[in-house]
Length: 316
Image (cartoon, rainbow, N blue to C red; front, side, top):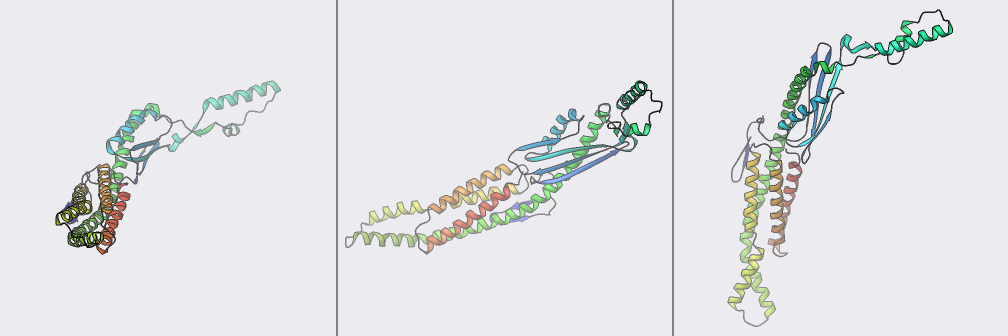
């Protein structure tokens, strides 16, 4: 997992813990084979704002749907999940004769023989080839429903374990990429701190020169100059925005350190970081060299935040 410091983020061994960060995309399946039938469970997961479950189950398995949904909700917090249950008969049980259909055909044949005086016996092979006589035997789901529920639950749990491992592995890569972006944002913020501090004397000097230009030969009132300088400095001061941005970066790092189910919290933090970067850019003083440098750094921070938001969309 990730441990955080004031200026750096370090990443521990790649294998995530069960309670760690998870992505919302993945695929997994599990299979069970018994005498006479086989059962397979597949799960596909993609990102979604909430938990969105889509189930496809064979006819006769409808009573198991509430239990399946319960297990999925217990294990997955967010994402669009496609769950499919495949059930197939095997061996002799897979093929059977529909006696009712065969009997109806034989009855019709015998009726015709009597009506037209036909002596030829009906051909059994021909009757077996008639539609509906031979086919997949009806699954005895009702009689085995309790046993099947246990097998389905076991397969679903196995598939979810595999899905979690895939999602944690992907989240580990996302964590490394996001940590790198956070380090870049922190470095840009430190540069802004230095740049803004150095720009204050130059800004006050330019303000005095501008006022002198407007007043012409009239003498400058030191008190008025100080007042105007104070108002202008307050309007262009971004120290609070930079402090809040640092705080949000630290909170983001802390959430990345291994907590689960943090996607919504990370998204909220990024909204706050975006707000601070917008305010910072709106306060950038002038078009001189210092102002242009501050704007450039602010835009870089804004770009990194946007990239983080794209990555967070895939975090559970």
